[in-house]
Amino acid sequence: MSRQGEADERRMTPLAVKLASRIAAAGPIPVRDYMAACLADPDYGYYRAQQAIGSAGDFITAPEISQVFGELLGLWSAVVWQQMGAPSSFQLVEIGPGRGTMMADTLRATRRVPGFADAAKIVLVEPSPVLQARQKEALARARDDMRWLTDLADVASGPTILLANEVLDVLPITQLVRAEAAWHERTIALDDNGALAFGLDSEPWPGPLPAVAATAPAGSILEVRGLRGVARDLSRMAGAGSFAALLIDYGHEATGFGDTLQAVRRHETEHPLASPGEADLTAMVDFEAAAAAFADVGLVAERLVTQAEFLGALGIAERASRLMSANPSRAGEIEMGAARLISPQGMGTRFKALGLRSADVPSLPGFPQQPDAASPAPAAAR
Ligand code: SAH
Image 1: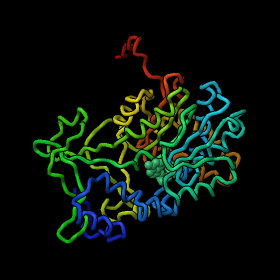
Image 2: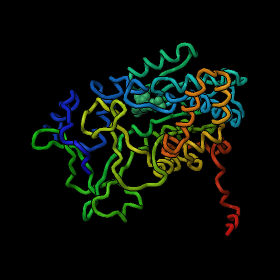
Image 3: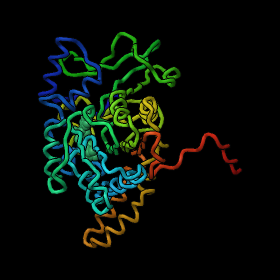
Image 4: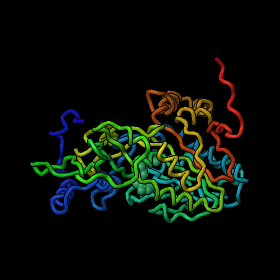
């Protein structure tokens, strides 16, 4: 499990010092508390302090790669709004808007959809004050009536279209390690030199486990993300129907095993304990578990698709060529950006799109129709 050079690379960042004294006083902490502290510690959390996102930051995301991404999500939202019967008022919510780029592109692309801009109440959910300020700057010219909230739990119910790109991956995970007889929670402890090190809780994990856990060989690592809070918030918004959500993230289709905790600083991966609070810390989304968590609260999950399939179905190729003809001097950059979003070497297959809706909303655009359970399966061609 050791990655090259990991031992030498631990830096005593201010957050490492704070966590080490907490662990010295009260004992090892679960990985999920470590992740939460790294990202959201009020003094030293990564998203509290850093200009993380973008080519000059630590990592780059789809909306920062190409304006086409946010534009297509805008057009997707407009179609969904029409499918809902074009309600005269609805909320367009984005969770974790980063630098505000995606919402700016979304709003620009939908400006000319009749009635859409007037009906949309824009709500941005962002816990980081630094990023909220960045978003306000980026969106100042788009509209002057947007609302910012720090907590998803404060979003009102009612007709809603919700977008989130690369947000599920920052929600803290629990890591479990299979020992001979049971699963134990992975912790962050201190080594002999007082530096942060991975440890293992001596008590068996008392929480629920997915069915696949039963077959795992010793040494397997299982990651469990607590999505119940988010699912509850979405189901409350969807209470009266007319709800749709699009969650795009990197992850795998089915629950599996392996350590996916990943720290990224200045566009390079590093050991997750190397520089607490100064690197982005994420873990892959288990989309099987996520879809189940949302289905549990009554939302309908569309069939999971790759980002390439989703953006392809929304017409990324046509949109990029139109943009290239209108901006010949930027044609190369536009073409490369769009290619990176959909190519298998880029983000095309690693990233997936999860569509969620309340049962009254028709199948969402960009997702293949679910096979109808009532009709017989088509005979396979042999
Ligand atoms: N969507 C943006 C940013 C992704 S980075 C993009 O694609 O570029 C993750 C974002 O989620 C940041 O804005 C971060 O501050 C925010 N975030 C982190 N924890 C969150 C939480 N619990 N609820 C909502 N947003 C959160």
